[in-house]
Image 1 (cartoon, helix red, strand yellow):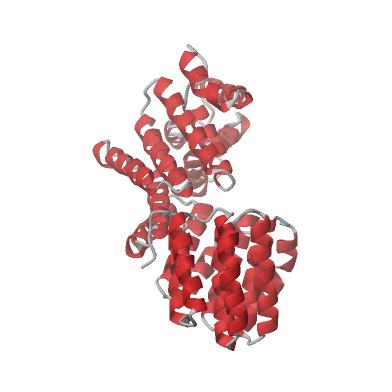
Image 2 (tube, rainbow, N blue to C red):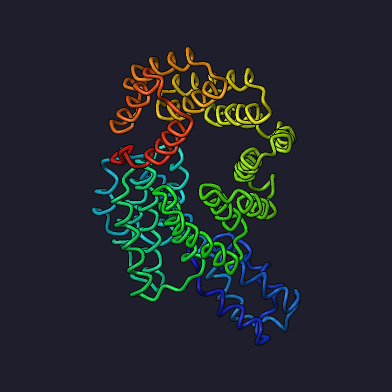
Length: 435
């Protein structure tokens, strides 16, 4: 939630002996801490330095503090009510409702709630995430200017950039990040957590664009800033992104080192999905580092955790990873079974692009075994299927070249690897051509 700058003054009052630290909990400041990560960190650091007890209670200050906490709670409850009202409307009516209102749909609490909802929606529907983030922008426009307004605006622009990236609109994403950077530099935004978030999100855009050196720089800086802000979960997440970037650069050893560091910051009970994502990456990098038995051991250790998330997308990724392990161990029959199952599953879900990518793993497997007949069959099957799915025109053109190379028996391992890399890169850039 937003940073309630009252906290610093409260802690100064405690430090001066006007209010005991123990009283903060009595009046409900710990609830206030749950609304403000920065305030919580300041409070915890103060307790570590000064202990749980302080001087005598100043009754007037205590009363004022209790009143302020009550006001903050009410503001948060009002924001939650406004959010429910907005979400009850059809999407096309929401922005107009915000603009028509004279007193409702205001304030930083509602802005943060909308941004949180947008983040939740991002994995499933980038368009919904964009819409919710735009609503946060409209709310901020209607709100009274406060000291943190520029920080919130920079966060909104970065969030719009990230949602645009996921939606495949890279140029739009770049423009939003330029606006966020402008606010940071011209409006002297210095909040470490916010600066880390902007670097983090822009780093993901650069990684998608395969501007890997720039992505590495941004993720590294974000990790440092998250450390300063003492945000362990976000630190772990950005380290996972950094590890993935190292892997794309071909630095698998570094990828493993950073991924293990990220996992050390995570708890399977507090952040189970993020932890599982890190463990998946760890197993994948172990395979690519020539350690399939260790990768298999990681998957075996996480068997129960994978079973607790039966979503088809996750289970198909797990199947594909088991296929890669089988290839590395020389079990080509198990590998083929896994890749065919994964390809079929993606096609059933209408995910033609993902099916095209896994088809390249099948092609490499057939080439490795010299199975020309199966390779030609794969080439003949691909185009009709992928034209009916979600594969964009430039990727279809690249698959035509693959089909022709297979038909003429000119296909090579290097060509298939290059095509696989192209498909992975072009996933987020439909205008990119295969050369």
